[in-house]
Length: 238
Image (cartoon, rainbow, N blue to C red):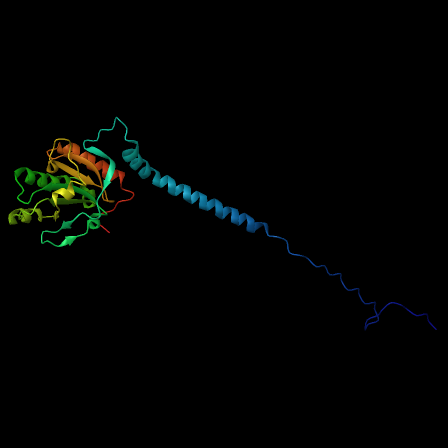
């Protein structure tokens, strides 16, 4: 009698192979995820830096023109400091007598002339020069609106209105002289109508120029203002 064999045999009588050992592998944090997060944050910082670099010339030009105001600057007009905001309650009316909200003048540069409805020769000359100055701005001319503030109740001459509406029309509004004098101020000893008044797109009166100016120098002032505000101003009103 043969001795007992402790080996377990398969169907062919051969010893059955031992089952392979199994190992449980626990997942480890993927290093790629953290790296991707760092790359995303770095990309955002770079994008912000690029945007700042692109905007820097506009910011610098505006800051230097309106804030630093170096003594050597050759602006022709008189800068108004502090700038004077357009009063919200300024009573304005169009030539037909309909009320116009002062806020409707926001959103565009304004070249303002003040004068009575009868508009004498000096007034006509200012209105003519107002048109010439705007046209001289070339591609930036649509960022400047011509405004005539009529400070009395005198009727407007039909032939003058026809001339003003040829080409790009003038914005003609009536306002009491006393109310205008609370916003716009002439030079000492001068009359209210003796100047051009420049108002920025936020409605702030920021510059005053003589009513009989050196046209070339005043044009250069306007060109500087257009360049300095190129980043935040656009043609037309909202």
